[in-house]
Image (cartoon, rainbow, N blue to C red; front, side):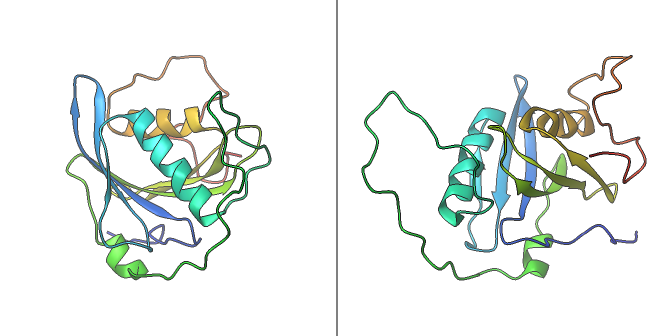
Length: 166
């Protein structure tokens, strides 16, 4: 299979490996260049929180809005630290999940959501997403856990031609 869509391309690119779906919850690991160990998640919401922390640590892409909290905020945010790549892109791309593997490239964090591109490695297909919700729906549809409702032309699907998205 030609792997033309298999690239990381950004400092915040991650490889998402879905290992299992139990009780409707997606479980697995995601990998990035700055650690050899994968970050485990046991649900989609945990995945999103972990990825958000990763992007905040890198300070890339920079969010256009500040986070709010009901708990006390730290007066001083973490200073930007230079991150050193530990894992090569080739090593990163060699990671695979039992149910599915995706390369996630978040390009923007605007309007309290994410915009970017996702590649389904098993099918070598890439599609743009315009929100976190759309990204999760694309992953779920690839894993056959969510049925796409007919008549929704605003949502992207893996059957759309590349470049017709956002």
